[in-house]
Image 1 (cartoon, rainbow, N blue to C red):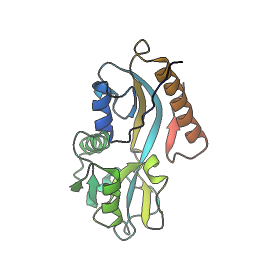
Image 2: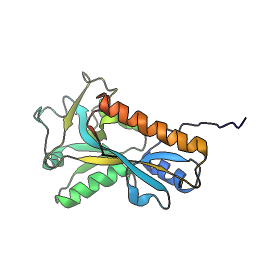
Image 3: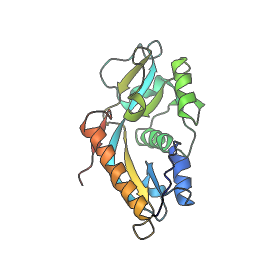
Image 4: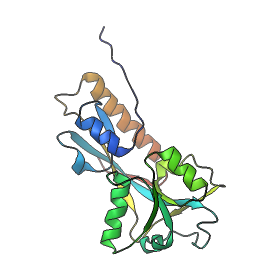
Amino acid sequence: MPMSDCMWWKSLSGNLERMINTRQIDLAIVFQKDKILRWSARPILEEQLFLIGSHALLAALPDNPITPEQLAGIPLIMPSQGHGLRGRLDAVCQEHALNVEIVAEIDGLALLMRAVRDGLGATLQPGAAISHLDNDALRVIGVHNPVLSRPNFLVSLSDDELTPAGLAARVVLTKVMRQLVDAGEWPGATLYAY
């Protein structure tokens, strides 16, 4: 009977993009379709980005969603250049002629969120990152007009190259992502029609 190994990787999107492009992994969820060279990319959902920071740091901001312009006065901790989230922020800054203050670049979510909890700055993160936060310790504010968001693409080898196990995994992963959004367990996520 044929056997398959299933290995799960948790990494920043830039690392996953590199791994799929070098065929180290068969499937990935990434946020910039244009960086995926020759693979199948299926849009699954759009994910809203939220401003996250200590209550003291964000005390001057309203409880309502803020505009991108209001980010200009907030010290931000973000991933380094080349990561999807940072690219999205840079695009919004260019589009709206904004200058934001990046006080630190940290390429690991746990360490980045520790710096945010310690009050060193705020960050922009997707709903998936806020679903397990202690909201008593941190404040979470939406960013609107326009809504800051990013697409989530499920990328894989082409159907011809993907193993039957890989094809099955892609179907299951798509189903789980859709179920999480439908159940309201993925804050700020909206499904694309399929």
